[in-house]
Length: 466
Ligand SMILES: *Cc1c(COP(=O)(O)O)cnc(C)c1O
Image 1: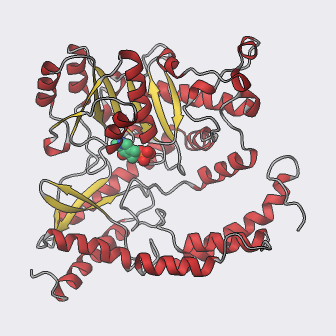
Image 2: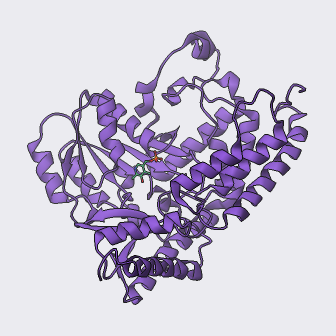
Image 3: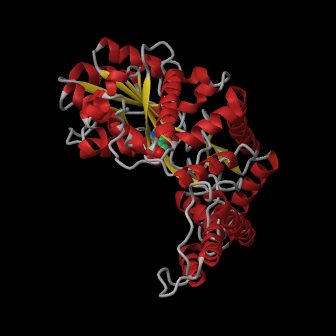
């Protein structure tokens, strides 16, 4: 076989074009074969089919680029849980915009690595512009806001706790029962005390309990609040919490992985009042920002707040190189080799503009409200509560938790719908996390019909008496 061509340089695009034709055809064929939001049959069937259609991964003689691309991309698409399908709505698993995926191709072809200027001359400038621009959206009045690009909320929360530890030593984290699991994991990784967990009745941090915790606990404290919880999409009372942390001289981190992009919607941004008062903010654009993974942000009000991450490796940021004007990038992450995720984000922001982003967000929130209306009007279904962002919890009116869990798995194994689950107030709920701005009222009604049919199926099979 001839030496395979490269993606970059002047020749790269011409080599990519026919390969992309093969990839795009395979994506199309795989989606047609799947026909729904996910492959039917459940894990054993899908595993078997995927193994059977993909063949050995390291054959003695290669099968060539078109064959391998066709085989593996088709298999992946056929077996995908595809968030572009309006009935794939379990998680904060976004349907990426086509333009963002296209931008990501350029990132792969050029392969800038963000750990040193000599691997990413323009990409590092673009990333710096993007991070200061996004940080200024979060901290409009701060002197020199800055942000790091992360692999997502998990890494951003971990960095936030690391920065707090570097400011104060072994801080005690306080979070509410609604906080993301990555907060507890971050304390474990960083050798910090386990978080003190305060109640979150009705899904949000209880300020009275926070006041008590801040009054009782001693030593440096870090409160982590959530703007958009994973289970219900609720937003903690950020301003109230910031008043309390200010009064008690505690630090505040806000995990706005889900809700943060509401900033771009003039209609919904008041939900985030108080966000700018945090010492650090987590925000994900691979959720309510329609980016392919990954696209996370950790923002801080002042560039200097990131100084503890400064690190030196003579081959990447020697002092004399830095003195001579080569930007020192190593402190922008704990990772070394790092993808230019800034590119797809920048392309998206520029292509859509403020209006376009606001429209996507408003549409998505409106779809969630419409779904809630449909559930409210359906006597066979019970709505947990009005959505705050785009998460809607519901369950059949007459079903026990076992039936609810069975309905979810039935829809999964039949390849009909991908719904999530959340245990709230002692009951199990079906969770629809809407992120698809193309979902129509008919799509949403159909989703509910699927649930109702699955419920009737579960009851007529006699698994659960009504
Ligand atoms: C999704 C999410 C995270 C984790 O983010 P990843 O991007 O999956 O690492 C953390 N916190 C909240 C509130 C989230 O919704």
